[in-house]
Image 1 (spheres, chains in turn cyan, blue):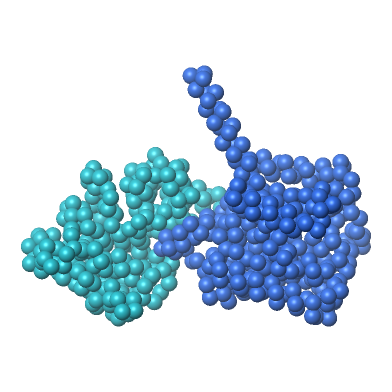
Image 2 (spheres, helix red, strand yellow):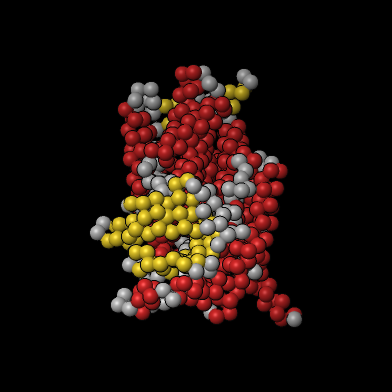
Length: 255
Length: 317
């Protein structure tokens, strides 16, 4: 579904990603792990078109994404969340999700200016679907609350709801579990498994938190210093000597 | 709710003024209306989309000179010429946005500043625009009747302004307004959700240009004379100041700001030479003390009454 082929990203002299290959298949949760600075977030930014790979290709559903503007990549069925959350903090939770639904429920300027029935219908339908998405993430209670006032754990979930609003085929999650408490992580795992199993969504999960990665991933790819270390199932990765070296050996990173 | 209440108030003032106000006051209320409508374009561009334009006066110039020239040279009646000129202003605004490589704060501010200068010097140096002398605005004629009484001009200008302000208000509360506000808050999140940053922002600039051109055309009817000195960087900055003082998040802020800038100089006419100083001192104070503009007094009032209601409720409980 999503394939990275020998992707290299250089910023001047700094090599953030050095020849990474990766494929995420339909209906799987694919984790991307590695010590701090391994280039994990850069991979998401490359896929979403924020950075252009210096070398290599990024292919989604057999068509290249590299070089396309971000909003067109998003409309092809890719959605993401952000490591430090990028919510629209002045908006209520439901308005945040409605931004993601904008494309689906479009209406023309004239229809709004003249007050035609079309705009009301579309706005109501968007609001209704936004509420359904908040329910799916179990945060519908906070629909009318300003996103900026929500506690951290709920903000992360609101970001997932908002990303789902674009009706993605593949969801890119940038450290969704960072800073979450134990019971929140359990709940998050349930939600992500649900999205995969009930809705057939593929997920590329970038995270440090092993309680998430090891519990729900179908496959895991490990990066270190921008380089590919290993790809395999959870058990294969746990016993891979290169991975153990990257995490515990001279690299100095931590899980 | 405050928004609807404000609309009732503005429409009541506009409707009652011809019966209660003298000619001088009526003229000034009309000027407040067209100025507010011009500024509402900026409200959409700056307050909603977060972009800074120093060219609103240029679009006002395109609307007013355009309408007058269409009448003088092609015989197009003013009431048709003004919307046509406003559409031209919109196309120019769209092109300006389209040609800007980046539609971000400083870049757009500089491009519009340069554009403002170009328009001003073009007006001064062309023969067709009357050069530095300016142009007299012909009277509006409708079905053979000449509409040049103060009352007729008031009715036309206020109606056009109300349409403009109402349209901008609706756009702010539409998916376009929502997407532009989303881009302002986090453009990386908005584009990742499929927002076309460039076309949305270009559309915001075009919209503000249409509002400026349309309301500007009707303001020309009120002023009866086009003087190139009305269309400078200074007047463009005045429009920004009006928006900031009134409040840049809603059209009501534009109306309040316009009222202040039209009426205060009248009250302080003895201090004429210091007017710019006084007004911009006021703007600076406003930015520090009331960054959301004077309109926020009303929402503060809303909070206050909400707070009192909750206290009252607690007492009864």
